[in-house]
Image 1 (cartoon, rainbow, N blue to C red):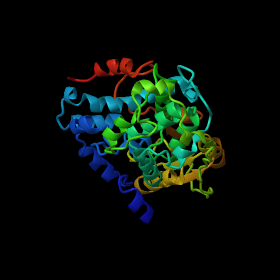
Image 2 (tube, rainbow, N blue to C red; image 1 turned 120 degrees about the horizontal axis):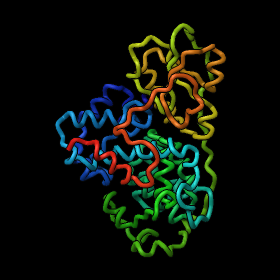
Image 3 (cartoon, one colour; image 1 turned 180 degrees about the vertical axis):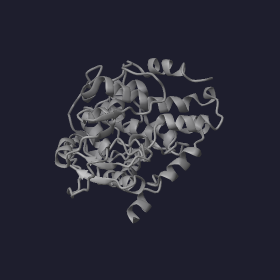
Image 4 (cartoon, one colour; image 1 turned 45 degrees about the vertical axis):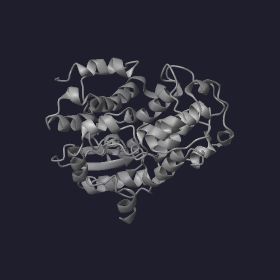
Amino acid sequence: MGLFQEEYSIFPTNYQEVLQRIRKIDPIKYASTRNYLNGSVTYLSPYISRGIISTKFILSEVLNRGYNPSKIEKFIQELAWRDYWQQIAISKNTAINEDLKHVQTPIANHSISDAIVEANTGIIAIDKAISKFYETGYLHNHVRMYVASIACNVGQNHWRKPAKWMYYHLLDADWASNTLSWQWVAGSNANKKYVANQDNINKYCFTNQKNTFLDIPYEAFSSLEIPEVLKKTSSVKLETPLPEQKEIEIKTSLPTYIYNFYNLDPKWDKDIVANRILLLEPSHFSNHPISKKTLDFITKFSKENIDQIQLYVGEFDDLVDKYLLKDMHFKEHPLNSHYKGAEVNRDWMFDVNGYHSSFFSFWKKCKKQLDY
């Protein structure tokens, strides 16, 4: 318990505490401060990414407190970004693992700068944030963009390996959001690259650093050589420390509900008597590895909040064959498209589906469904 009490204090594993956090959201303050390191952010991202709560549920809870959508549009937009990335992943599937719109250029390597991994870039705010990231599994969204910009647009790393490194350590690891956001920064999923100079970092991270490789005007980025500190790269070893599989007890007369890394919803048909299994597939985590900290977070949450849930480490088909399962239930997600049984749709904020080439074309349709 000590590990979670000390390191996960900002991310409790008690569902009632998560609900209390939603009730305390200040969407107006969020809009004006969210880009600052000490901004009034919600700290709900791990619960959204793990399917514990939905963006639709959060929006409903906030609107039920009497806020007019026109007054909290920025907050709603940021929630909508999450659904937007998910819709792209559903539409494009494995294509999101490659440069989606444009080929990233220039590229010096397909690894990651050691200075980033070691929190030794020389940019004080970034290095402190990465060090804390390893301890907590949390990284402020603005800092994620800074790190991605340094990796891809200054260090000229191709986005894929650095994105996997960040995903590995994030409690809110989401393959679509992480992958597509990195591509957005690198210019392979946007029409321009995102860059931030030292003045920008100083403003939002409350530092006053000068004379760094980022202490340049924005027009200088296009001709910036790779700084010496970023030139050394290596392939980081990322492996998921899955536990050994133990026997589980199955009642074949009951339906079986499958939970996984992207669905830990404790309210999902909770009144139905069923076998409930947290499925950890080695094949999935071989392609999308996560850290022990993240693995501990999901197993602890599921054990505390989903009644009689059992852990199965193995492939979906092996689980079905071994226990002769027939009545299977699972929630839709692109990474479990090989599941068989009764598929349940996720809750979306808006009835806007399919691929949109830009967020704002997506948002334009979403906005029409809000009652201003």
